[in-house]
Amino acid sequence: MAHSLRDQLLKAGLVTEAQLEKANQPKPAPSRQPQQHNQTSRRDNRPARTVEKPQRTENKAPRPTPKEKSDLAQFYAARAKTEREEREQAEQRQREIAARRKQTREQVAALITANLQNVDDADIRYNFVVGDNIKYLYVTEAQQQALADGNLAITFLGGKRCLIPLDIAQQILALDPDKLIVINSPDAEDPLTPTHLPQGERG
Image (cartoon, rainbow, N blue to C red; front, side, top):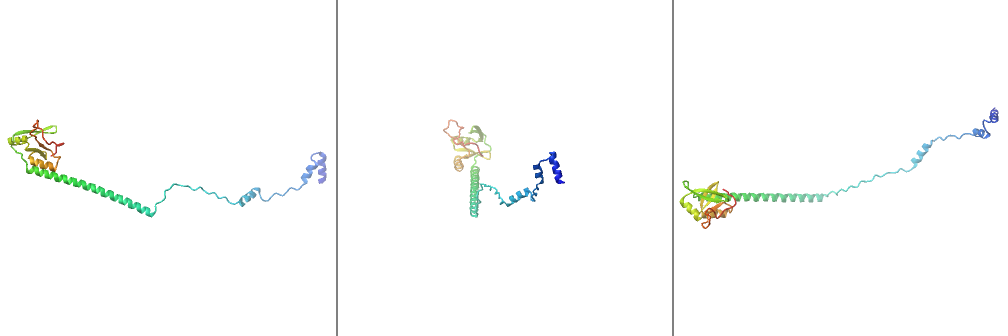
């Protein structure tokens, strides 16, 4: 019956002998393992590739050794000690200068107080110059002449105008050259011009 169908198809021209022979050939059995699996197997057999990450190179200073740390600590300690000693010495010098100034002021004040020549009821006004200012104090007639002759001097103590002998004025200037003391020069053209006129007025 199969041959009858074959003959009928051939006679009808629906198929050819070659097509019938090809149709009768057995089909190959399909592969049990999928192609993808084979590719995976081949990849699995390859050695694993290791990817190394590049290491970062940072410019870090080497850490100091314990000995270097000790030397550095000693250096800073020595410098701190030196600075502290210099500061203490400077403060000590300032204290000494202040103490000497105080002692000098006390000695000057003692000399002025012990040798003060002011007279409370003096009625002659005596003018003298301090810088650009004309000042005055009241003196007796004898004191006026002594001032004109340069035998008396004028100074200040606590804001008060004080008459003192010339030799006491010279002692005060030896102690404190900046102390304001007015001494009249008999040979000066202007009788109001003192021979000693320091910068500024201090009591």
